[in-house]
Image (tube, rainbow, N blue to C red):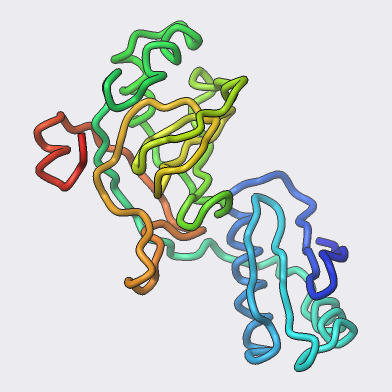
Length: 224
């Protein structure tokens, strides 16, 4: 693991190994150890697939002192997987709720039912957050479901949209532009500032998708 500069008040730690749950656990545990060393000086930490970006308050914690702490702590070779939560997300899969479902099936040489079955067939690791509050990058999707992003992003993607891009899947927590391919919609609220924590999914969690029909989608609060 090595560090680099990230703006005036930031440092980025980069893990040398490929993305995996073990890398995520190592970065999360390093973050927790760092917070214990400097509970007042660190303002935020942002997780990536292989990175941890640390933002600090220079009036409390100098860059040199933070670097010294990082080098002293080093990577923990005995890092154990963190007990992240298991989250089950209900999804209404259809060409109405997922505009790209039929096209994804064609791109992957599968039936629509095959896409749904494969997407629901495994547990995904929450690797990173970004793009929008509550948006969590989940992986890895089964290799046959590998699809490129849209050539031209949509100006508006409905909140709760379940999508694919490359070997990743995600749920849009709010209405926003987006270039991922939509295959369904989740009725649950993914982000709410009045809740603690505000995001339903956090890095280190494990996520499964469960198919539901339109009636159940509406019962759970989904908007058609």
